[in-house]
Length: 257
Length: 257
DNA sequence: CGCAGACTTGAAGATTATCAACCACCGTGG
DNA sequence: CCACGGTGGTTGATAATCTTCAAGTCTGCG
Image (cartoon, rainbow over all chains, first blue to last red; front, side, top):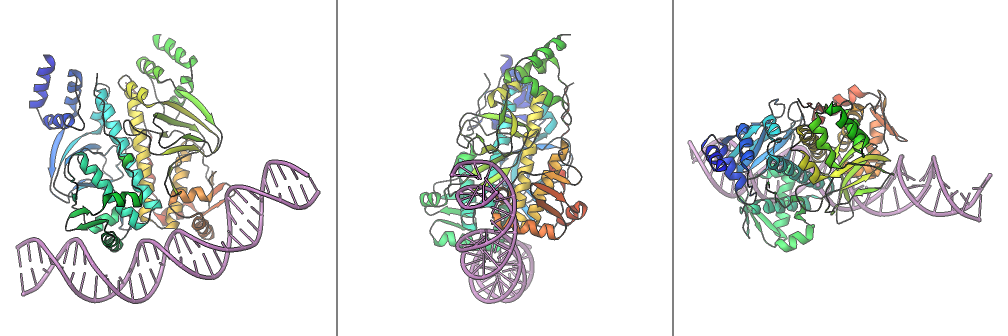
């Protein structure tokens, strides 16, 4: 009964409602105890909305926020002092961004690529809530570990794979990640990225990405034209470049007892 | 008084003693409440010791362990199916390794480079202890975030910096990390890595690393010979390549109330 | 219509890899 | 004591990959 009242309370008060729905939706599927719902309250979640190509958090910012993407494409990157930039990842629905090492300015930036809806909360508040919600602690830890795993894949890409394999790998990764929430069909997916953005993510020039995409198209593997990535022969592509989506994790989060 | 007894209990029982000392040593400097010390007990820490070049955890392993390096150099890497490998990081004293996304095989391997002493514990046990030790939760989260920050730097290195800058960057990074625990002097530090290992970390060939090191030496910037990295003109080097150690974080962990 | 941003293509140049030696060091066993 | 093998380091010549520069084209949009 108390649980029911509490749930109602949280559902109706503030933005926590949306976050709660998010946590309870498949494939996350959290089941909260009353204490845990209480623990979520002080998070003081802001459910924000940004237009495309807006900087949400800039490297050097001291205030530490934690973000969970609810919908849309984001882009986390690092600016170099020579004007170049390295895109670290394109966070999608369900991805957690912004967990940085203790006090100090954040080391990377977050921007929207498309219109996005995003949950923002204070990093310290989340830390404090850990003691009261083991589920939240597990969720955040798993999510951070998954993000880390993705970055490791990108490092492997940049360090030890040539342009063709590297590009195909990123396209297959985005496909696999999007399909978790049903945002990718059998044929392919809508991709809002420019060739320059792909280049900054892959550690190539936009020109070379262009040629590489043409290669992939001419080999009847993938075609990326006018905002849509179409897989022409996914099995062959996966086999050719040795893609293994294991690194993305299963996203099965245990609910509290 | 109870605290005193508990402390004694933990200190004398099992390997937790060493971990406790580790947590309490500068620059970590944890101050534990009695409850927190209790929470540490079920971690069942194993303080292990490995000879050089031993595989500690292999990619594909299902059992999930969490490692904290106590001394020595380790090496976390990912093997590719074409025989290449990408070294993700060289974890040093204080570094946390092995937090992977929920159930499923680990995606990277951990090996010793030198003789190392290392704490091993079950990932699930750590997760469970979070509820009882907010400090531990903060420590692990901060540590994972820091590791992530380091990997991001390596990605930036591989993606957007040339061989010279990249190599110098890694050497300066290792220097900064070692100096946290006083393992690097003004002149430089002992480095057990081979040029092949550097190459696998930097995404280059060993031959090119060799030439790059020669370049750095001939420009009177750094010299890496017979296991010692000697900085010939650190200020100039830092300035030339635009090194900013911000990404390593401050490693200031708040103690519990 | 004209403009701006993204995409495309060619030619030339820089960076990095590959191939093939050779050297230096070190522990081992005769 | 020295020959021996193995690992890691060094160097040169050549080739592949990727970048840079320069000049288009295409498309959406005021």
